[in-house]
Structures are given as C-alpha cells and as structure tokens.
Image 1 (cartoon, one colour):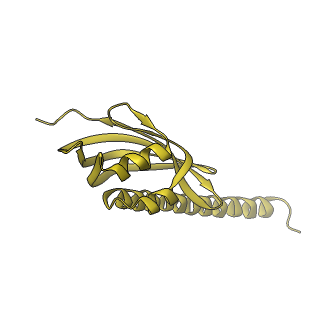
Image 2 (cartoon, helix red, strand yellow; image 1 turned 45 degrees about the horizontal axis):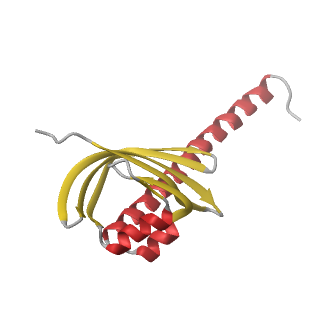
Length: 151
C-alpha cells in the first residue's frame, strides 16, 4: 500500500482522471438530448404523430408562443387536425444542461408554420425540459417566446 506523498499524487491523478471521464460523460447525454430534439422537430414537420407520441412524456406541458398551453393529448390532437402545421424548424444557439435524470435545453429557432390556413415565419427563444425515463429522454415541458420581427 502506498502512503505519504506518493499516495496523494496517485489520488490526485485518479481524481483528475475521474473529472475527465465525468466531462466526457456529461457531453454524451447532451448529445443524446439534442438528437431526441432533432427527431422530435423532424416528426413535427412531417406530422408523424406516432413518432411524436413516443418522444413526448404523458405529462407534457407544451406552451406555444401565443401563451396557450396544451397537454400531450391536446397537442397531438392539434397537429392531427391540421389546425397547426410545422413547415420548418431550424434551431440554433442550443445549450443543454444535465441534472441527473433531467435535462434543460435552451436555444433559438427559426420557425415556419401554417396556422388556421395562414403561413407565418418568425424566430423564437425556447426553454425545454426532458426527463430520462427507462433510459429514454422524453420532453416534459416546452415554453417558447416569439421574438420581435427583425427590421
């Protein structure tokens, strides 16, 4: 058994190795969250209700830029009805923070939608929360704010 300064050096090296591993591991879940987000946005644009059903938590709270809030069933019904079509979603400036089994993601997005027959293009800031359940990241909350039109 090593004691004294040699042991301390070894513990410091092991601690630093552990930190390096933690940083790499912390990056992986962030990438996994962004991948799930990309799948969700793609499903929204394709109106793939079946895939969205898999990516959204049963207890989802979805707040639109208008301030209206829907649960999962209501949101899927809105998309299924055609009252709202996502034509394109282009996220940017994304930051993901992982807190155990919860991930908080924030960013911007350029949006193109058709709502009640009228096409609109605008930019948003969003904050979303994911929970990892049985190893799968599910969206549990979405809040978006429409940004002022750029002149």
